[in-house]
Image (cartoon, rainbow, N blue to C red; front, side):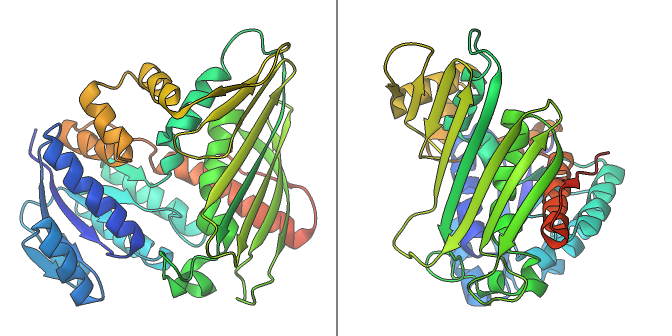
Length: 358
């Protein structure tokens, strides 16, 4: 297999996250590769990336990245409105694509992007990183155990300070033309994908949104009830607030007839659980890691990357090197986008809304 040659477009907060991970994965030598180009509209920021990564090419023009000799993979970490054109160009050039979430502002754009990626037959992955979360991976495994009885319901509260300042410093997230939506699309598309993974396909939704921060078209509250195809319901509360010193948090509670699971952390736990009888137990972070390794079959070397939050990027680069499908891909993301689209239509109509499926 050819050694991956990587370019990154977009050197903001999320670009920094992926750039660090790419360097870590390549240093691990679990996957070979060369980090060759970085691009950002702020050339000084791009130059800072290049100085850290050793990438020999620094540019503010994405076309320069696409023209890098031997390029095999591109990370697209720009603001949402810029994703479609970059994905279409990458697909046309036969490049492996890692695109951040959300894929685009509208479902129509997402469908066009997915069709282009399918037609190109390229390795593709989307930044729905909760699929790689140790704590949710372990909860998913615990939910399969016998004796729990029927699944009853689950609720997730996801709250975060409005991401136009602080570590995000992304004023574009307050601009509808650039972001396409607020807390539901920009942030909680992670949660929507998590709900599909943990609780099954969604048939219909009922959604309410509010805008209190004054950014037109950018909701800062979204409350959703999901009607799953299996007949049960789950709920999501997604909130952007102005408590700047409060970290981004997720509180998940899962109820079975004979079991209860909960966590306040979306990466390593701990997990609270209780059975039909007896007191509540706490699974600490180290046991979460042990069970995560059992569930995924990760080697000790792969676990070192996972503990540093690099599992998603490792998975993508490994797929690029081996030519195997990456996960979660565009088809996983498009399913989440269809649910979010139904949520917005539900909020506008004040009614339950069915979810379109392939």
